[in-house]
Every structure is written in C-alpha cells, then in structure tokens.
Length: 519
Image 1: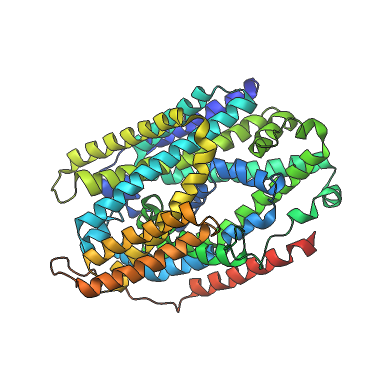
Image 2 (image 1 turned 180 degrees about the horizontal axis):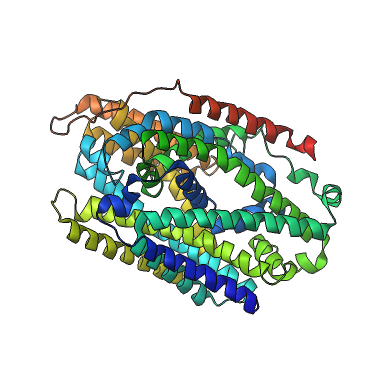
C-alpha cells in the first residue's frame, strides 16, 4: 500500500463518520431501530445483501470454489432454497410480524406464549450474534495482518471505532444506507478481481483451457447427506429452506430490516428483491474464485505463497501482488466494508434486543431515557464485539465452522416455535418451550454422536421434532388462558412475487445443472 491507497481508505472512513453525523437526530425507538419505517425496497434489499456478502464470504467462498480440496461451483447449492424461503416469509411470517407493530421479533412470542419464551430466545440471539461478529472481525484482521501487513490490532480497532460511531449516532438509517454503499463497493471489488485475474490468465479462452473441469460441477443429485457426504441437492434444498426461513424470518438482525419497511408492499418487494439478488451475487464471486484459483494453479509464484491448509489467503495475496496502487486501496476498502456491514447490523439489532426484551420490557420508559439506553447498549455491544475479536485467537477457523453448526442446531426449533405461534392455536406455552428444548437437544445429539448426517439436515430435523413434541405435550397440558392469541394476517399465495420467485428457483437450478456444458 502507498499514499494513494491510504488516502482512499481515509476518505472512506471520513465518509462513514459523516454518515453517522448526518442521521444523528433520532426522536424515538422507531427512528433509531426502524428508521421511522421510512425505507424503500431498494436500500433495504441492498442492506440485506451487504450483510450476507460478509468479509468471510468475500474471502473464503472464492477460495473454496477455486482452491479448496473438494470445492468448486457446488457452493451455488447454498442458494437454491433462498427463493422458496422468501415465498414462505412473504406469505406466512413477516406480514403478521409487520402488522403487530413490534421492534424486537421476540416480543411477538411473548404475546403468544409469555415472557419466558421471549427472553430465552432473545438471550440466545444476543450471545451468538455478538460472538459470531467478533470472530468475523478477527478473521478479517488476521488475514489483513498476514498478507497486507496491516497490524491486526489496527484493523480491529479501525473497524470497531468507525462502525460504532456511525451506528451509535445514526441508528438504523446509518446502518441501512451505509450497507447500501458498502454493497456497491463490494460488487465493484468482485468485478475488479475478476477482470484483473482474467487479464493475467490471458483472457476467457485461456481460462477455459486451464480451468479444472471437476470444479465446474454445481449439482450432485446422488448425495443425500446421510453417509458423511455433503452438498447434495436434497439436503441443500430442504435443510436450506428451514435454515433461510429461520435466519431471515426469526433472527433479529434480519427481521429488523423488514420491520423498517415503509409499507407491506415495500416489505414484499424487499423479500422479492433479496430472493432474486442472492444467486447472481453468489455466482459472481464464485466465478471470480474460479478464475483466481485457475490463475493460482497456473502460476508458481502465486500458488507458492498460499499455504495448502489456508486457501483463504488467495484473495488478499492476489490484491497485494497483482493489482495496481489505488485499486489496492479500493479493495482494502471493500474488505473493510464487508466487516463493517456485519458489525453495524449486529450493533443495532443487539441493542434493540437488549432494550426491548430485557431492560424496557413491560415498563413505561420516557423517550429521552429510552434513547439514552439505546445509545448505551449500542456502544456496549460494539465494544463487546471488538473485545471478542481480540481474544478468539487461533481458534477462529474452528469457531467459524462451529458457529455455522450452532446456527443449524437452533434455527429449525426456533422457526418451529414462531410458526406454531402463528398457525397452531392448540400449542400451549409449556408445549412450545419443551418442544424447543427437545428439538435443540436432538440436534446436539446428532452433532455429537451421528456425524454421518450432514449438518444442513439439522435445520429440518430440529423443526419437525419441535412440532411433534410441542403438539404431544400440548395435548397433555392444554393452552392456559392469559396469553391472548395473536392476530394473524391472511395467508395469500396467489400474488405475483410468489410466481416470480418460483420461476427464478427453477431457473437457477436449471442453470446450475447445465453449468458444465457452458464451459
């Protein structure tokens, strides 16, 4: 990095500090946590996409596609269930959440099952989100330190302080518009890496001649995920459906964006756009990874610098050694952008969950005191995430994998709890809580003692177990009066966005299946 690169990074940081200042006037909780419900579909969709395209995705997914043993374009199967999940959210879950006027999605559970379910799930969210965000920051920092020679502590502090300042001041408006800017920078970064990598290879024709044909295969119909195999079509589709519905529909960091929409129509448009955007973005960074992996395998000076057990070094080394100054600064900004997007979303959603579910629950708090508490908890969680990043140390690579599995342990049972709250009147509070615990327990058992079952299946298995146990317990312990049934919005599948998403699902599967014949 030279003076030009540092100037670009400094300009970027200054812009985001101004962004927080620009939106610093927050009148109440709806302003701070939901942006006054003033957002249109485009910034919300871009913000959601930016959170998904995290720094780890920008660095690790292309390395999986291009270099990792057993990797390749099969990474695309992660996206198959997304359009179908958006349909379920659009039709079943989110309309009821939106109309209920909640800020924390866990508040909805108290209306149906009581405070114990709400507090339990909110605490689980806060701990897991803070820890996962800290690990993500550490991962980015350690890669920048080892490859770009940026001291780890500087990366962590820079990401943490800048993000905390603009999130603290600007609330959800700063988060969403900041994410929108960061998404644009990230996509520009993907295009730059792809273009320079293709140029170094000698063009598209040379790439086709040199690419490993085994890495082009994207769909495996033979793998069912019950014999230690992974990435099969059916486990990725069925397990992925439960995973994405739960993540986008019951995780505070994601639902909060949908609750910020200016109208129900905007909310549906946001879900539609997200269902249509994810696959093209993923396809873009997968192709980038395929190009750079092919380049690395054809250049000894490149591949010799990438440790065999650390393919994640591929992107940062390429940025350092193959891109001109100025472009290097822009790509460093892209990596910082991805990290800041994840952290800003975490700070705002963690603050919302803490204030709504723990400190202000059931109390009348004056707006001034509420806003002071909101700012303090935002600052607290920002510091917690940064501190965690300093202490995860060498276990980070293991923890990242573990976090994904921990999510799949709980996503299915949590989703089942929300679906029961909306659709199943006979489920009692005791039934819901016991079903949730048993569902999680079964998944933990599968993790520890049945490793042959692919962890994507846990999302579906946990949900089914939770439904069954909750129903059986509720037959013995019926619903107790005192917690009124929530008002459920009409379920309508007959709407244009549903048809668009079904058609898009068919399209991305067909494209993925015929992908090898296109190369």
